[in-house]
Each structure stands twice: as structure tokens, then as C-alpha cells.
Image 1 (cartoon, rainbow, N blue to C red):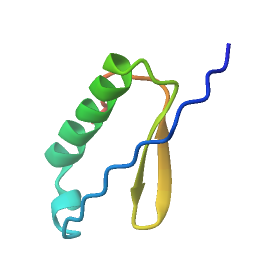
Image 2: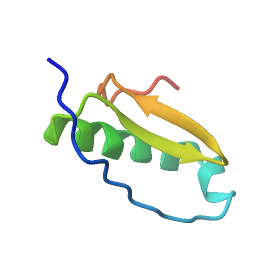
Image 3: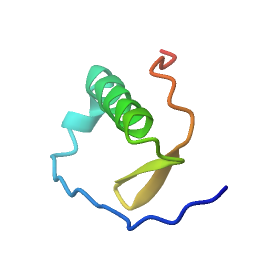
Length: 64
């Protein structure tokens, strides 16, 4: 069953060098996965440098 909710957007700005750190990206993905699970969302998305990345599999494990 598809449920339509109002979209909530959080905006944050960081310098590009921060996102070059693999550990930072792993922690960011873990946070987004936890948020998606706990809020029971079908998809959580993030936009990085104008590109949208949608997460629908909330597995915290990120392959190195």
C-alpha cells in the first residue's frame, strides 16, 4: 500500500573535502539508514553536488 506523506527536507552544507573521507561517508549512510528504518520510510534520499542518491535498503553495512 502506497502512503503519501508531506516531504520533509533537511539542508546542510559542508566543504567538499569532508565528503572525501570514507569514514564520514560510512557514518552518513548509517545515519540515513537508521533514520529511514526508525521513521518507517520507503526511501530516504540525499543530494550531493546536484546528484540525488536514494536509499531503500537500510542495511548499515557498507562495503569497503
